[in-house]
Length: 416
Image 1: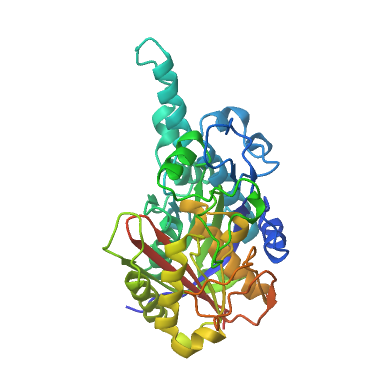
Image 2: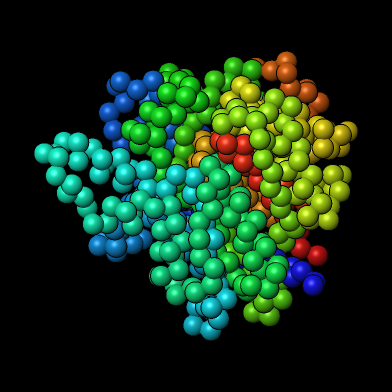
């Protein structure tokens, strides 16, 4: 069968550096850091006292107060970003065939704050199991796409992909395939996460995964820098409306880019550490290019997973050099996590939005906070350090990897 072409017709973003897609983009190209001291709880006894929280966000500005109380933050974030993307796509919700509109969402953890609070409440009580009746529906990771579909009446495929930090890239690839194979005309996809909590920060600190640069939070996320000491936790959501090209063309939709293809692989190596030679990362990028029918030399820009961890950054860049050879030196490589922090299950979505907007505007956002050369990184690679660079981006790739060795990669191209 002939596969359908799939395009992006709507974008929505709720991030630590901007609460809309336009604000997010302005934050990216200006090199804005979203890191600051945590405001949600007392951090006195925590090793890491900062994160990339959302700024000036109030769920009830977007959602009915009663409905918002029934949702964990991660689901609230999903609703807000999805609504922006749907509005941006200018979908006519009265005429679209809702049986052929799906919602495929990514979340690495789900309702962590809800789970944490209910367990703490139980521990403080007399042992009676007095749990909130919304405990389970607020916590489960699949509730975000459920809420989106309930609000808009979308009756196509509806589920959550959970592959740690690769979750929303996984969701985008699944959404691509749902439309390619003719199961849907439109899919709202993306991811959300809200793990800046006592449990989230405490757990990642226990693993020694987080930066502890408490004296300078805004410079703590420093991918590829020789002094990097771990990632900075972020929160938020990213949403994309994917659509059958012919369906989009027939309704005169604005098309941001074509979703050229995607790839998946596993490191099959370690629970949390990447393979030192990037074997799984090599495989996922090759899978992605083959799936898209593209050659390595077609790629202009790669938004890396680039979390600012000592092992991960080096392994990924080694893999890029392996896959792209001499052409790797011609690619604008960056890590927008230097600005947003690491949004875990939402990372793939907001980084996909970044590469799509880089294509639209002809500018690649920087990797900020780079001051010290890492001798283990090829100095000839263009890591787009500290300042945005103009570039005519025709093909752009986004890499996202997760604990457990989950690797996902999606590639976009300018529409012909």
